[in-house]
Amino acid sequence: MYDIIVIGGGPAGMSAAIYARRSGRSVLVIERAAFGGQMATSPRVENYPGFSSVSGAELADRMLEQAAALGAELELGEATGIEPGAIKTVHTDDGDFQARAVIVAAGVKHRRLGLPGEEELTGNGVSFCAVCDGAFYAGRTAAVVGGGNSAVQEALLLAQSCEYVVLCHRRELTAERSLLDALEAQENVSVMNYVRPTGFLRAEDGALRGVSAAVVVQIERAAGTEQYAIRLGGTSDAVYLACRSNSEQLNTAEDTGTSLSRWVISMEDGHMTIRSARYLSRTLQYDADAGCFRCYAKTKTPLTVYRGETSSLWYTTQPKMHDHQLVETGRREPTCTMSGWIDFRCTICGELRRQPLEPLGHEVVNGLCVRCGEVMQLPFRDVPEDAYYYDAVVWGLFRGVVNGTTMTTFSPDLSCTRAQAVTFLWRAAGSPEPTASEMTFTDVKADSYYYKAVLWAVENKITSGMSDTLFAPDATCSRSQIVTFLYRMQNSPESKAENPFTDVKADAYYANAVLWAVENGVTTGASATTFDPAGDCTRGQIVTFLYRCLSK
Image (tube, rainbow, N blue to C red):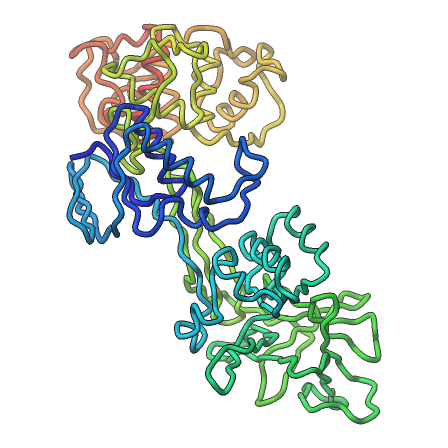
């Protein structure tokens, strides 16, 4: 049995293995293909600290050597399942392995186009790796589909050996600026935005000879409406839309007459442009957020194009108002340290919306995150692992709630000031910007580290100060004060707990707060029958109160 099993041998998996071994944990790394992941296929890595430029294969080898030298065990095999429990069992195609924690760093896989014949042509004209297969296309024309860093890197690599490279993407390129600058310097690379592949062109013997593409207007006017595709086929660079006089329709027949109300669809600098032949300043521009084309003139009058009858478009000068009917189209779950999101699309108008999901944060038990398996090492020599506040300090430090008093000390027995207590609460709440701008306390200066925290605490009725004009930031925070701050932060909920403490009177301002804290496991008091409300609250105690209250 191992302390930790890491599923995935890419950079993330190797990093996890290295950190775990340095912490004295036994580690097994399971990789189904090749150690290094997709990074190993990258010709150059230029954004990894410590290397101005290094091949992905070399960097992967160095990571593997370091993990192995530290004692990490390596296993080639595919993980097929995980059985949860105090001891986790990882099933693979080569047997079962057990560990106390499992880190899933499975990486990513190649994204496919989903076109007919793709599987058959993979390895016979369709490739996912320019490093691996680029030499097969030397002196020929190659098409690259995508617009991110990986796609642009592949196009740059192919440009060194191919006669011509076409990079097509369904929207604007999203790669880093340095890669886009390098791409613009290539004379044999052409970029086509707002284009998607629709199929593979085959020779008589079945070999791949090209890719068909279409420019697609993806707009939905009502539930059940189909998409309307505008193609720039053959060698033509424009399609004419003739507008019937005094009509609400545009048809797709080529305009051979003398109508002055023509709309010309063309590719200009890699962009699809729909321009009025009569009013050159009026163009239809694709609004990606709204999922439709809008006509922009000098007057900014919107003209929205929707799918209409067969072989036609119709438009309205008034926007279609409706309640969005959203369906989920994709999601990325948040992790302890990374945010996630949920994508939605309106079934009526096609509008896309993204709902962000906050990082989950580490859930630490005995110095180990039970969510991701990361080993939380503290830099503080005065916080032993068996201290009651150990997990709380780990939580507070990695959430940015508390800091040490020095680089190597936390000073858990040091009394906490009122300013520190309010600042810890504010940081635990995410350091929100206070809406109030006027400070009523004369002893809280605008340049003090706790200024915004005090403003926030006052406007949220967590504290009202020691008087109307004094907050007493340097005064020691008592146990009754911090429990009351937390209680008010939780909107002063009712408690049905009985009072076990003889030193907490029923009419005390903190009485309800203490009962709530006992009921919710925030504190058990100084003893079975005393709470010590006037006692100084230490740094170890206050971070523990915060952890018990806010980490649930």
